[in-house]
Amino acid sequence: LKVTMTDVKGETRTFDNVDEGLSLMEVAKAHGVEGIFGDCGGGCSCATCHVYVAAEWMKKVGQPDDIELDMLDMAAEPQANSRLSCQIKMSAELDGIEVTVAPSA
Ligand code: FES
Image 1 (cartoon, helix red, strand yellow):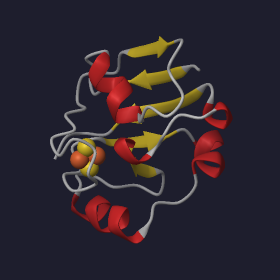
Image 2: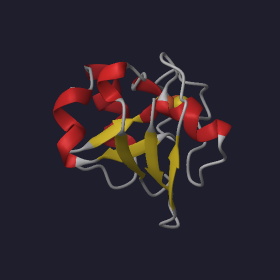
Image 3: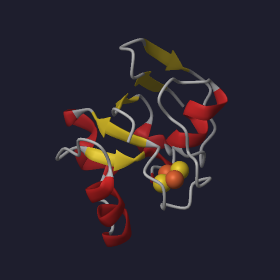
Image 4: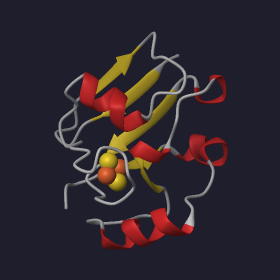
């Protein structure tokens, strides 16, 4: 599966052969994407994996649950397309997804 990420410095990279089931946070960490820390290890409790999902992908990604929304409230510069990347798991449906790393908290 393919994922395109733009880091906090504005550098865009595309990663191929991403395994199904990996979270976008894990993908970012594996490739050292700047601005993604994932301090809580994917537990939806730190918001250091905050990303903005490209508009055309919002529908497929779906809405955050209440716990994630609470965390996003505490994140720096939340937007309507904010998600925690540890809560987005790669699947065939998300093949080609594009996200931008949000400014860190
Ligand atoms: Fe902590 Fe995503 S890694 S909320």
